[in-house]
Image (cartoon, rainbow, N blue to C red):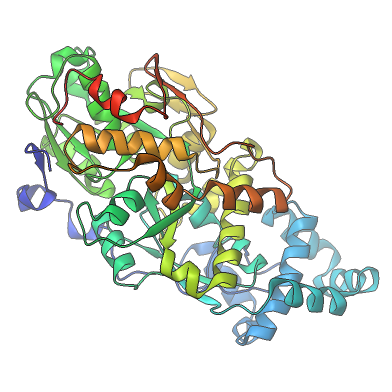
Length: 490
């Protein structure tokens, strides 16, 4: 590990977030309540025991609604079909669904739908087509950031249910915890940083186990934020001696920060100090003066602006437009032992990611993932990130629609670039077969099949070259690429 990367436990405890504001790893979501889609009093975009006022009011109004929750797999599948049909009728807009059910009456709509469609036949066909799921109740971990949008919103907006799954999405304090719980099989799958399944497969930073990454969650979606005291230091050459936060060693945040400062002549291990700080603690550390800036996932970049502590120096799309950030990953063992469940889970993630990619859906998604059991952030902050219309902390309102975007296709050349940076900075020292590791972990061929099966466009090839800060990355020549850098460890 590079010598100047300082783990968060070495930061003074007095400068940590107040306990009341820390991510509570015990405050996990309950399993999805497959609410009655014909009942206007029930919100279908929040989980059971959500705690928000709207859900509390709905629970009080829908007396006895708890008895209407399906508790066995057959009933869950039947409700899933009903929910998918109703959600589809209203374009997944829960507000329009509830308004219509209240106006017309849920019983009337249910009877009309049953008269138009052979509901029993549809339910039977869905059960037969999906095949027997080895597991229906799954635990999926996530770190509360907007990069996890598809994994999170698939819970309140019914995408897991569409494929017969009862998923509990579990808020996780940081990436080391997500990695360890995945390795210990406490999580069936998890929201990970795109370098993590590569590192875990190679045994970099942990015991080796083959993990697979069949879907990228988001592209772009990061930023470099500086403390307001540094508004006169916009040139990276002025950052010598600065301390920056990144969320994890094996993260695009770490590798993009290193790449960026090195291109401006700074050695990230000699001229900077880089600390690992869980995303929810970034803003508090910036406020306390423990760090001069951070390269972090949102919404914490925007939260620093919201709290008038920092400003957005640069969106990472300006370093590499279309770079991967976070992903959906699981162990190869889980996929091998539960092939039908894995297939259903992957389809739900691809579906949710494609839905997130439509800018018209972003405001609704922001409201769905804002509550305490998900991101626990003001919806206005999340909306600025997802829509790309945001205050930058320098007195400007910017309009960058692709500040964050969502594309599930895992280009294997993305994996090759990440591996080159792991080699460049000494995270891996032995020989690595770049192309083979990329094929083993980033399952582009499998994802293409699922995307096309679901009616989405997918690339014909598994790899392509990229432009990064004006330079072409040729994925077929990884060792030459590593050797081309004057500033490196290897």
